[in-house]
Length: 385
Image 1 (cartoon, rainbow, N blue to C red):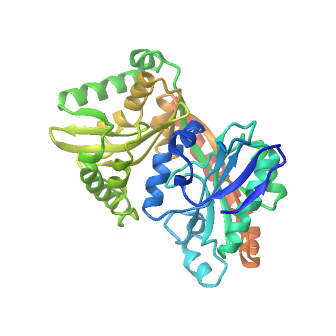
Image 2 (image 1 turned 30 degrees about the vertical axis):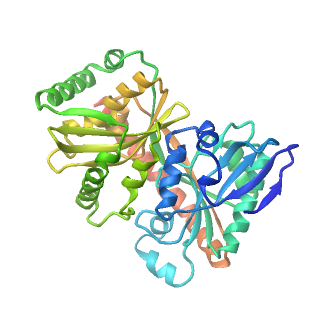
């Protein structure tokens, strides 16, 4: 564990190689969203994730902010290296121009990379110190790049500091986000257009008529094996390959017994038809690791669990925001979501990686922005058609 003094009196930055270095209470107190739960990090690290978090501590040694980060050694389908190089990613890696292994800033297994703690603490100077420490760690591990993959477009301080430090910026994607400001599920339904109201009511009626029970399980221990089996079967059906998820992941998550970790389940009798891990923190809800059975995939139950049911639970739980991710944007927008633009910041740490990024970053930015413009146009046409 290395340390560097920060300019703020009494404040220090440390590299944390495990979430266990900080108590759950301190950690969860600075969570901005569900992915920030201590239990989520502890589970991933128990399953082999290599942490290099930057913790910011005040003079009483209390954690007041954190930039989560992990070493990613393998090139997995859909990661930065594979996305940017496309079919040539294996050739690029063999020639030494790849972007793996890298240091990725963000929560484990998430589509978000928000920092933790208030912006008042995460000043430009603190962010610069944190990125400097991360670069030292990356060079010690002989990594090829530092990636901050899903930075919100409004994160001006992070973007400016990163540019000054040599990071390249490109458009990543848009995430669907719902701000929950309804007092009841009925008020939410009434706020939608006539067609969407009809769709939502059809979903509710179908779920009821089919005898399906939707629950949010808090004690996961009895269901861990069931969750694992459905998730892996669903992943193969969707992607045509086996999921790269540690075999003990759901069992480890269950052992955490965290009040901020639940699983949304749709049951018909004792059969689990659909599921999604639901994490809440900082007034926000994240859903991930979703899975569907063959008979309900993309049907009315899927649509019901996608938006209405999370909104219902968010209202009951006093949560004010749901991060719905970058997929299935059309049904999410119809149901009240907005799009939030996100950017990728990346810095090469070897001459070959920097050279590759000089070519790839502008091309990737242009391609992704053009793709996004087409997508937004289609969404607008569909919504008004």
